[in-house]
Image (cartoon, rainbow, N blue to C red; front, side, top):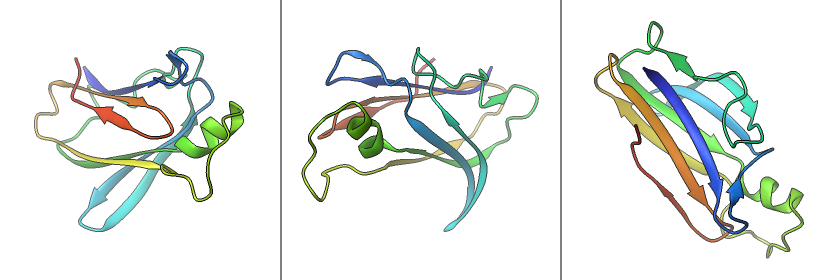
Length: 117
C-alpha cells in the first residue's frame, strides 16, 4: 500500500531508465517539493514507494516527469520547441489506506496514465 510510479518509454519499448521525476504535495496553486529522483533500470523510483502506507495522506499531489531531457539523452532528434517538455500529472488521494500507483506511458509525442494497482 502507498504511492508508487512506473514509466515506460513507448518509443523504444523499454522502461524509462534515467528519467528525472519530481513529487510534490499541492494545495490549490501552491506546490511543495517532496522529493526528486532518477528512475532506475526498471523505470521505477530506486528507493521503492514514494510514500509508504504509514505516511501517505489523503490530499492532492503532483508528479512531474522530465520527458524532453530523457528523450534527448536517448539521442532522439526532437524539434525545437519540443512537443512535450515535462509531463505534469495532478491527482488526488481520497483513501490513504489504498495503494495508488501512477504509471506513465510516454513517447516524445504522446502520453497516457491511469490509476494502476
